[in-house]
Length: 545
Image (cartoon, rainbow, N blue to C red; front, side, top):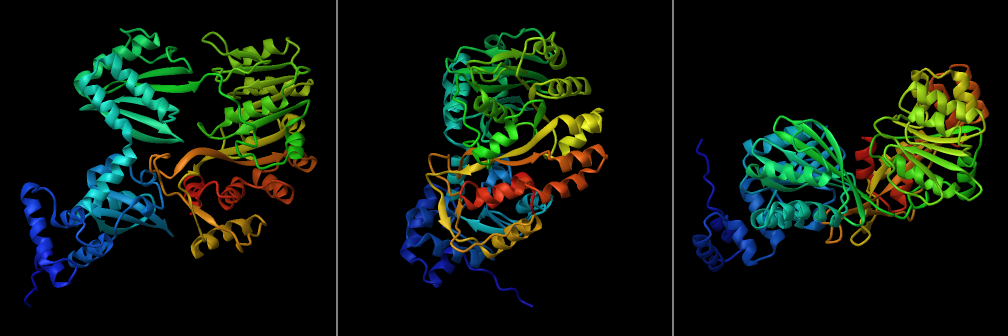
């Protein structure tokens, strides 16, 4: 059987009436001066016809689905699913996800062998890739926006400035970009600079390997670290007026990695309601304004536990109450509080023993890490104090199990534990560019299924959701800042009885659900309905489907 040979793209487009022969001539003239640019991209640049029509026809000719990719096409943040490095390497951008399928755009230069690694990467995350093609110039533009201006600023300083100027540029750019952490990482052939913004890591720049030792030397000098030591060290940078910068160094196989934690001085403490706490004033008082008890905030690292503790303390603070905090380190200084910072020669348990002799009414204990600290916290609660602390665990009910594993008796847990709160942080949709739309059928089904599982019913009549589109304010990501989603367990008498009987967390959860307890996902759904975040973002945090 004779195979039909495909005509050149230009000829096919003329035959279809998409462009004229004169358009092709102009494009070929342009290509002689820019031989690396494909004909389709040149026609797009010359704007000889509608871009969407052009790419759809090119797609049909090469046997692919074509789409004109713009910032408005991005229904998701691409780097949630594929790192920026992979996007750049394979010239691809994930732009929409639905029902376990993810749409990914490649340039029309790609062949199957180049898309297979991306396909396998997404398959390992449980996602089936639907392949599209678009113009290379549009992919480059979006990838540049994802990387942000930071790369340009730092790269410019790297090539023309001193090492002092380079380090200053890295830090000031991180501050301007609202980064919470700056990662400076020696790799095999370069030094990578990444910023954590709203909980996500973004690559900002890559610095040549020959500058590595100078860079490390400068970071150690301004952090007050030992230059000669090739071991883990902690330091501080105090030369930026509005920021305390904690610095941690850790040797790896290619050098020493540095992480800079940017802590703003005298930052206003947000009220717990600004953080996203779903309760009313009355419910807040019921849960937190107590004596002779222990309140615990539970969440993974980086989920905002300390911020919530500060907000609760700020809410309860008054001149009539003696409040003492024990922290590692003290991140925010609050007027009227006695704040103690754990040092090399002190521990949470040792400091807590001393504090109990200082006539406290309320104690904020940064973290319960071991049995000894937990026992002293329980004793403090049983002797008239109100203790607030944190634990690393997955939800509010698992706090009970965690304390059991530490060796605390069921009786002590039941008699002292008053409230447990679990939380996560989800990214807020950027208020400047979010776009209202109807919920899709799939979204309604997914949300209804989750809500009904916990006895909730959602009426979608007149309800809208929002897409995270991307604009200059949010670096074309679509999200700006974060908001908390919460669950609160008020330990009722019925729950106390179950704890004393040694009931499993499953039995305790079932009893709590009969009362006021609702899990994190329910508050997350309410945040979606109220327009704060998206179902994709909630799924990213809680893995709903």
